[in-house]
Amino acid sequence: MRSGIRHLRHTTGPETERIAIRKLKESGQHEKLWQMAIRLVGERPGCTALELLEFATPGTLEYSLRPRLSELKDEGLILAGKIRKCRVRGSSMETYYPVRAKESQGQLFTKGT
Image (tube, rainbow, N blue to C red; front, side):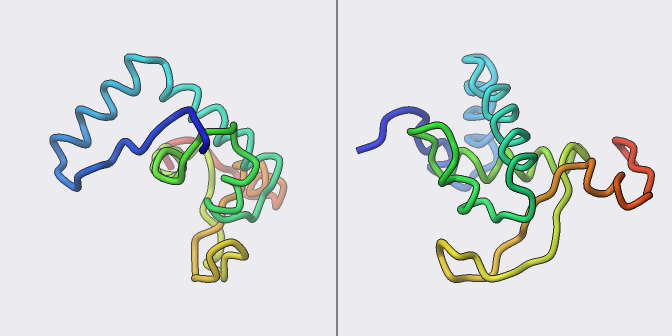
């Protein structure tokens, strides 16, 4: 059994979600998860969340990584790519790319635009 960060989104209620995120931030784990997610996306562009999870810190669960990827995407720190069949689960999933991938295509990308 893997140890480490556990399932934080045990309910779907927005209040409990806010509490879980607050606790994650207070513990310092939120920043560590963001850093890990950005590193993983940079090292393995075009992967789905579950494909990235295979290379995550041992003990990291899907329900810890996937929300952080969404947060980073919303903040403009990573980019969403095409949806494709995930080689881990076999279902259609979003892929992720580092911001520099868009910049390298000659398109200016600035956080918040």
